[in-house]
Length: 344
Image 1 (cartoon, rainbow, N blue to C red):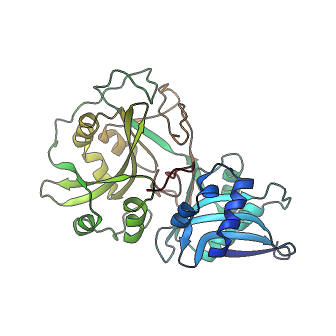
Image 2: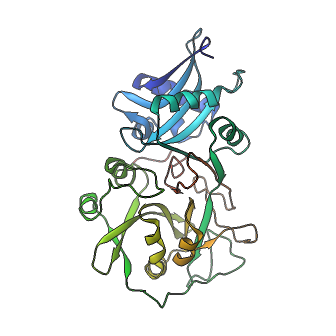
Image 3: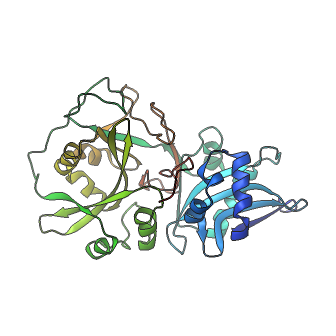
């Protein structure tokens, strides 16, 4: 492949060519194919762009792309984002080779991808990169006060009760301001089995997103110390709303200590349900939190796609470099608008 292609990181001048490539070879409706400002928000890093390109040496055209999202400047953790080969290109394994070249350039300590195609990329990353692959877990809790479900389809009503033990030891409190959050919680601290995320990444990703509005909740103990944080996002549809847990920072055990606060959050805000898509979260933690795990026996429909909306259960595949790595929906590019929505 070295004799046929040049592999290099993209530059700012390549953006429009990459967008056109996505339009022709991925999805012409995709936000990255149509919205220049959003593309820059997601991938532009000063003068370079977080895409690796395979360029034909003869015609100088892009033949494959591999996007990536770094969580910090030194590439401790990298997320894969859009592996795409030109439809007419016949070179075998060009997509995986472009990914390998990107990884050789960034040299991440840990790596993940969410939304990996189970038919094309999953077998390749298992074979060539020895990745751990599987389906993301989908947990949810229904609002006990809701009688008519519009977003979901409920055939079996699972009710969640308050905990009677230790119900006041840990509580959720909303933190609206990033500066306040950074004073109450060490955003640069590393946590066991969670990808390393820099403070600036958290700020940009959840407090400066140009389209989505995220909310941050601190998990506080009885001494009013913030021990962990949850990142959530509301979804409004069909005259109702749901809440999604999209990210978590802290010791994962704290996630299982806020069941009562979580139920209150769902009922007081009249959410139809709350859900959490993740992998690596211990089942006992989710159970303590009061969440039910979606499985083949559970016929309830808890949608995942809202842009556009699809009222059906969808399996989301992941790949990760380390077996015990814990991922949430907010990782990689999983919780990204797909269609060309207006920027705030």
